[in-house]
Image (cartoon, rainbow, N blue to C red; front, top):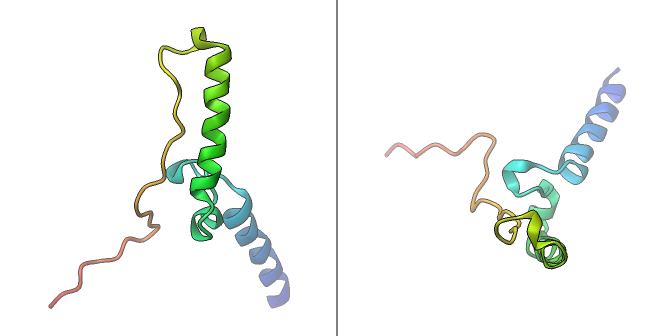
Amino acid sequence: MLEDARAVFAELFDWYNNKQYHSGIALLTPADLHHGRAAKIIAARQLVLDEAFAHHPERSAKPPSHPLPPEASWINPPTTALT
């Protein structure tokens, strides 16, 4: 039973951290941010957006831009230490 639970949660955590793109962190995975891949991924995506706009500028009033990740992202933000 414990082994089954560990297997289920290992699969869930792998999906959440490595495969699921999160809108709150600029359509990246938590692993992309953690491992410093965000800038490279965003730059590559921006090139695609720029190319698409160059081919069909009539589809948008202005060139699209990829969202940037927030400076910090928390599930449970740290609380201010009481002194």
